[in-house]
Length: 448
Image 1 (cartoon, helix red, strand yellow):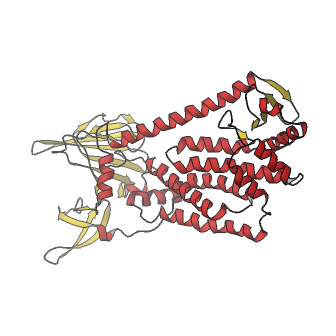
Image 2 (cartoon, helix red, strand yellow):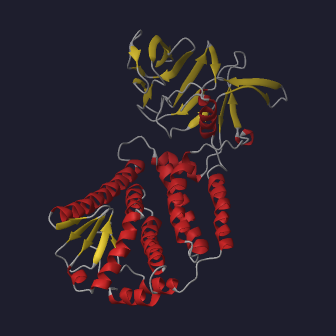
Image 3 (cartoon, helix red, strand yellow):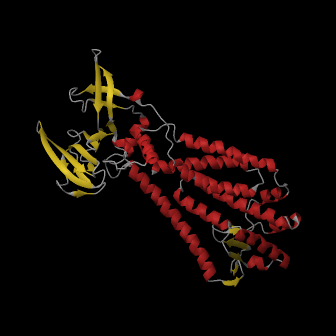
């Protein structure tokens, strides 16, 4: 989840920066508004799209030692290259409950709760104003007369007018209402609501707040252009200057006199952009492609298998250990090796071996029934192996455990704890084997 949030935040930041440097000076305001919707959709969707980029990992495999070349099982133990980021990831996912990962989660959800509280409070402020003020119902909108030093602001079908509004001339009042009705009919409040909800999810990204403010300014540009198509730009600009002070009662509202005033007056003098300038929006397509590829340049064997799973729709199992546990020996078969004496050896490792923490919990990869539990004494060390039959095709084996938490014949659910590892100094690894029709298969192709 943390990776998804970071990728979504990066994607949105890139798209907002692209807007500021490429689209900001265009006067196709409706197109710009659509771009803000597009940015939210793209930033949330792109990190979820599997992009199966083939990567060769053979160069990163380094044999350490060879075991039992006769049986061909558990023949080779290897480790992939581990850099500083891998070690940081393992540190974040350490076994204790109060680890860095959980602290980050606490901070993130605290921010979510804070922004959710502010959102609900703003909604209640609108409800309170409507409930405790005099209203005048019209066919498609409702005027709310509030006892505040406000001119006018709107939220969905409600147009709120205050004491300052009453001091305007009749012509100016009509112009203010006409302005706010454009906000109502164009559903500008829906845009703000979308970004308020989006900000709750990505509250840590400062570009979301900047984008929300830019979007509110964009709404005013849209309305200004619409109003001045049938009215004098100079008189309308005078009205903007006259009402250039004031803050909305709630942050969710569209305020008539919202700043930046100078930009609004300057853009009133701009002619509508040339039709050819709309093609500038096509330049956003390479940005989307860049973001997509940037999430796909490095794919671990886990991600690669998950992509294959999503594309082919194969049977999915859950991992037997918590995500983030390091794989010290992956699945492979019929791998040709050369010994120090130049002899060729065909190696196979038809299971996955994980590095585990002391007393780590081992989980069932799917629903099924415990078919067998074996226990052997390895020089005084008790080694437990559990076999679970999932259906007619699939069964799974969990090897190298210290203690079983289930009984033979017991029905188990996916992700149910079935066993425990022992002290890490004695039980330093755990092996997981998946069988299809009695034959070992690569578990990573089926783990979701």
